Length: 195
Ligand SMILES: N[C@@H](CCC(=O)N[C@@H](CS)C(=O)NCC(=O)O)C(=O)O
Picture 1: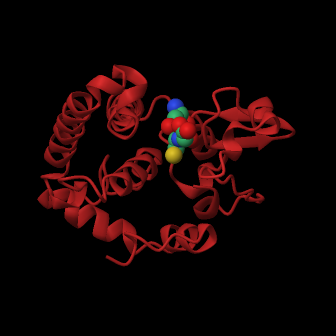
Picture 2: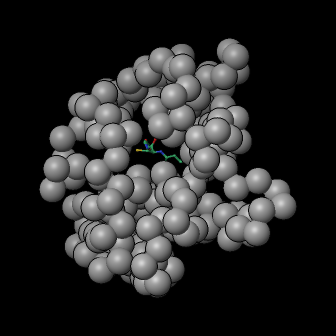
């Protein structure tokens, strides 16, 4: 979103393997110890969905916002909350099953999480079934950024999101965008984008 809106920003890499997100300095910015954090005018701002909606609002000219009064507003809010509240936490459970279920129940929790992730993608695939280019129609909006990130997260799961027919076409379209290519380049990510 930052790249696509042309906003001026500085990227500071946080190395999760080195657990930099749990360092005292990072925890001061984001007490949850999670990425991302956007520092705006010296103040930390967290929660991916909130950051996306705020950036879309700040850069209306980019066209990613769906403002109050717009006929798509309800769908926009519904979708953002569905992605952030239902799909994203199911991934958390999949990647960190012991966190919620304890080490002894890891396998069962992971299986449940996988089913939840897949059920969510089935719902999203149905929304795309009418041939729309983006989640809310012909225009790319904030939820498309979140959905694309979450689709990428499934790349090594038993059924990656792009195996659903309509999501497959959607993801292929998103992968052609310069912004997505650029974020991979800047963050040194090679997996998924070229697949
Ligand atoms: N609710 C947060 C969740 C962020 C989140 O789950 N971040 C992951 C991205 S990999 C993370 O920081 N994981 C590292 C960890 O949990 O140690 C948001 O939407 O920003």
